[in-house]
Image (cartoon, rainbow, N blue to C red):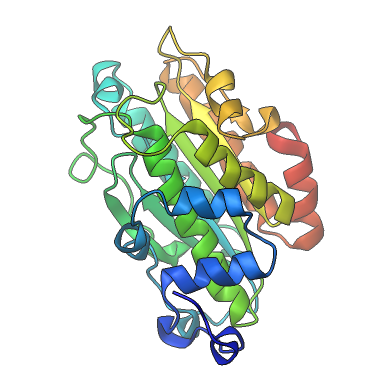
Amino acid sequence: MNMSKDDENMPVRNGSLDIEQLFEAARDEGALSNEAMQALHITDLGAQIQAGFGVQVDDVASSEVVLVTVMPDDSGSIKFAGNARSVRDGHNLVVGALADSRQRDSILAHNRYLNGTVLYPYCPIAQAVKMDTKNYDPQLGTPLYDQTVVLLGTVIAKAQEFALNGVPARTVTLIISDGADAGSTWAKAKDVCALVRDMRRAEAHIVAAIGIDDGNTDYRAVFRDMGIEDRWILTPKSDAADIRKAFALFSQSAVRASQGGASFSKTAAGGFGG
């Protein structure tokens, strides 16, 4: 779909521009490369991305927003290793820390599980749903590349929607996995990398990853291939205390990043240790 000049100058009130138009607007602004656009068009992602969009721009009173997006692994190996509770607790720790922060009114959160289930679309952090035994029962596969493309496409499109309405948006995204890709059918690591690279270049996005040790996977290699910087990769042991520590480090980083422009830039440059 091609936008007319009138469309290009039109705010996205009440979602009046569709996902494709948002991507085209980002490309026209130089925020998305041709390679990234190709990654987003390997298959039709519109409905999957729309499922995460949630709150409309007009319903957000803040003059700027931070989009915090998480993708917990819901593969069977999480349950088999006894880490389901640790992942639930880690997510809930992050939500609690952000909800208690001074910036909470400007923070929107979205949780999409690794196999595509949307626990909650973008909403005020105070409305984020806690993970529990009823809404999180990991027993599926690990389509890491496919679903990371969907996730990052959602982040990019939602940030673009706010930007076109004059609301600056910064984003902090966390991918959680306890294994390498196993099950992707259309995306590869290079497709994810194209998106992450463009997001990093825009200097308004942080993409982080937690790889829970499975005894076999070199998570730093996996996530590097996906374009994620070493400073934004954590590799906790398959241990409740270590996993909680990793989520706590992410929550601290997300809170710092939500504090404003200079703080966001400093956090992005420092990674988990900064």
